[in-house]
Length: 109
Image (cartoon, rainbow, N blue to C red; front, side):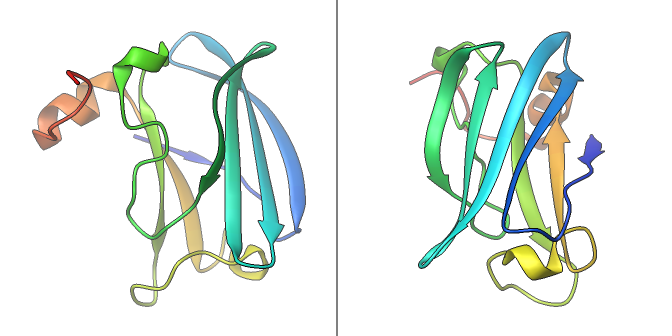
């Protein structure tokens, strides 16, 4: 499990190496919530996924991404808002071994 350093700004793009993958993460605030795209290089994995508290972003190994992401609220159970990123809400990357250890019904659909 790794913390991904997001900033409290409404639109941002991060380039990180996660699970041996050159990952691009777009995080952006819209009128009805915070959203996220995940790409490996220029290949989109998932796009326009709403970020909800403790909800997985990728959700399935079918998409070809190793691991997954979720946001968590350190002060309750609210969904993330950009103004509290990296202070109230943190973005976490789960490695494949983390997902297996959690025994999530994941990736076999």
